[in-house]
Amino acid sequence: MELRDKNGLTEAEYLAQYRPKNYNRPSVTADIVVLCTVPTGCELLLIRRGGHPYLGKWALPGGFSRESEPVSETARRELNEETRLAGIPLEPVGLFSTPGRDPRMWVMSEAYVTKLSGRAEASAGDDAADLAWFAVRAENSPQVLTLSFSGAGENFRAVLQKHMAAGISGPRVEYAIQDSGGLAFDHAAIIASALGKAGLI
Image 1 (cartoon, rainbow, N blue to C red):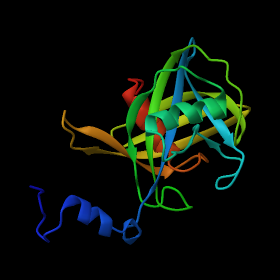
Image 2 (tube, rainbow, N blue to C red; image 1 turned 60 degrees about the vertical axis):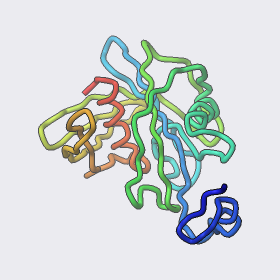
Image 3 (cartoon, rainbow, N blue to C red; image 1 turned 180 degrees about the vertical axis):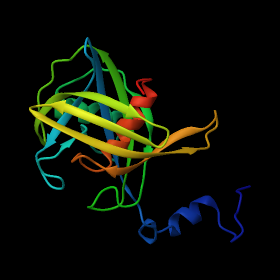
């Protein structure tokens, strides 16, 4: 006997009358934080955006997920398309879903991190106009994290407010951007979270 819900519908009947257009749906992206350890400290791979929004700004490699792939595959595909890097293990950092994080529409991003021992040979592809390795330095105080970036003849800083949030394994740090330093989207917060995940702050 088929189970029926409180409205008397079987699952097949429910799905036949279900209308996805009645519900707002976000787009999903993947963003990838590629870190490497060098004798002078830590470096981060950034791409220069070749299109709107944030045209010309430095950003993390990444892009929109396809309906036919899990987001973990999106991360691998986008990393390869934009930087030519492949076969690198990626670790999930978390889901970033602050309203308004993307000026185009409702977009949520699953972020990933990898930490390499030394610079990998990368080259810009797809919609990345350029890429460069940036030295990253963190100044960590109880309430504020300041990230300094130096590379490609540029220097800039991102300032983030820290607050504690409850987690299953104990308190965890979350970041709110006070000054993005010119980085695209909410990538300063993603980078901060990834540095924490990698044990670098």
